[in-house]
Length: 143
Image (cartoon, rainbow, N blue to C red; front, side):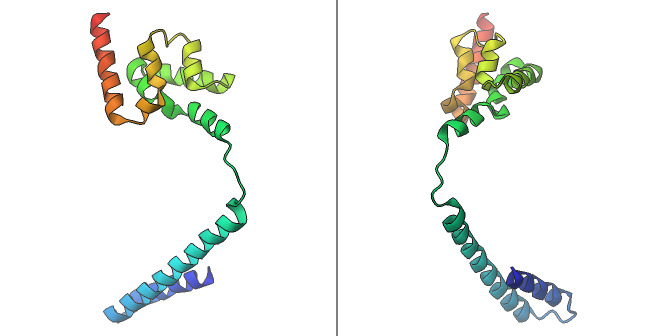
């Protein structure tokens, strides 16, 4: 870290100096950048070796947190509005439910089409999301 701070200080002093020699700036900046990047790379290696090695991902916990994320309500809010999405999210948080479970509990997911609003494959694919929204517009014309 001291080396990185020194590189930054050198760069600042060169830039503040009234004699801006391009060769000095380029060589000092480039060598400082290389040294800083090398230190960062070593830091990542140490972090991996000392902190991450041996850890395992709790997939159930991660999956549950994704299901409780407000991003799950993006398409839902396009169909039912922001207020409904906020109500669903608040219910999910208060009752420790996924957003989909909260939407079902509140009576929003009556049709199979509604349940697709929480389909991960659709939520992560822009084209499928657009097709789903189009399906809702067409279904609304039929109602």
